[in-house]
Image: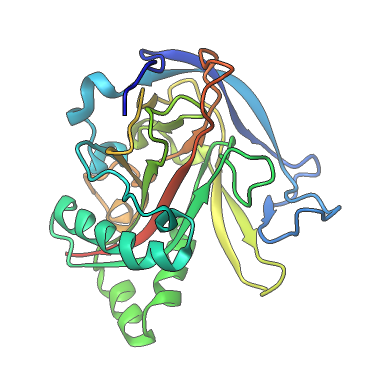
Length: 290
């Protein structure tokens, strides 16, 4: 496909929406499964837009690591299949795309022994779409919810062994655009984990009202020392690995710098009005070993 326009590149300053605590100082929470027409507010906390310098990661792709930054950028991956149903049918995604993600993670993560994919999300630009780009700075999991995921998706004895013996486990989100042309609308910003302090990570209860299940995500308070990046003109042959949790970071004297990556979609002020809306898929996986 001929490309008649390349999206803007280089560093950019754009607003990112950071955590603002509840006015009554109560613990923050999300209501995860409210129907679209519900009058109930989906969360009890707010957000504050902060103009933020976001560096273009493309000139330094090889310098970012999961252990230091909790993100990694991969290029020259297979393009989307020509089968239209692959990224619209959950069954097709699980059948055809999950094996690709499993192979990618096993070949990319040193000493990974087992991959367990537990969900995926398609995001579309239409306001009526079930899921649209999230414009709040967040982390998908906390240490508590990562352990819950292990117990939820593994047999009890296996989960107990992993959680009690110090076996390394991570949650990694594999993110990619689905657009045919290089991505321009609502690119993804992500902060180096090494620049994020623990006190800036705010656990948020993720409540499922229909099942009663309660997990945790994390909202992020702003600090000027945070280092933010994006990948300019990202193509559908590229992937971003977003490490949401790494149990190795909890160990004393660990070389892993936090093990969690804050991220958010953002509106690039240089985006053309006629730019194609962002279509993307993210696949979340538990990664075990050694």
